[in-house]
Image (cartoon, rainbow, N blue to C red):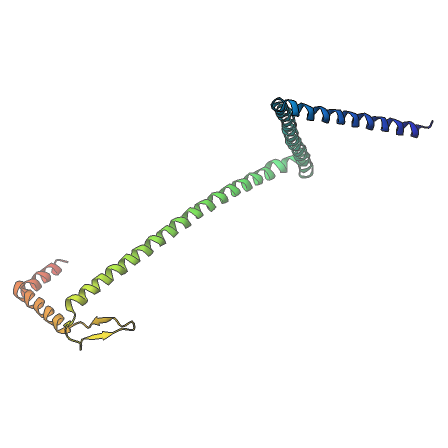
Length: 213
C-alpha cells in the first residue's frame, strides 16, 4: 500500500468520526431541548456567554499586542533615523543647529494654533458686534419712524380736507404737513426767546468770556 492510499484512508476515517460526532451531538441536543427546554436554553446561554467572553478577551489581547508592536516598531525606526541623521550631520551640528531648529518649529506650530484660536474668537466677537449693530439700527429705524409719525400727526394738515392728502401706490392716504403750523411754532419760539432772554446781555457775557482767552 502506497503512502497516498494510507493518507486517503486516514482522511476518510477522520471525516467519518467528525460526521458521527456531529450527528450524535445534534440528536442529543434536539432530544434534550424537547424534554427539558428551559434547562437546555440556560445551558446554551451559558455556553454562548463563555464563548463570547473568550473571543472578546482574545480580540482585546490581539489589539493591545498590535498597539504595543506598532509603538515598538515606530520607536526602533525613529531611533535608527536619529542615528542616521547624527551620523550624516555630525553631533555638533545636530546639537547646535538641528535641535534648536526643531524646537523653534514646534513652538511655531503651537503659536500658530493659538493664534488661529484667537482669530476665531475675534471673528466670533466681531460677528456678535455686527449683530448688535444691526439690531440697534433696526431699533433706531423704529424710533425714527415713530418720531416722523408724531411730527406728521402734530403738524399734519386738516383731516377733513382732501386737498392736503395724497394717495400712495398701495392706496393708503398720507396727510401733507401744514407748513403754516410749523411757521407759527417757530415764530412763537422766537418771540419767547426775545421776551425771556436779553440778547444784548447774553452777547456781552459771551464777549467777556472769550476775552479771557
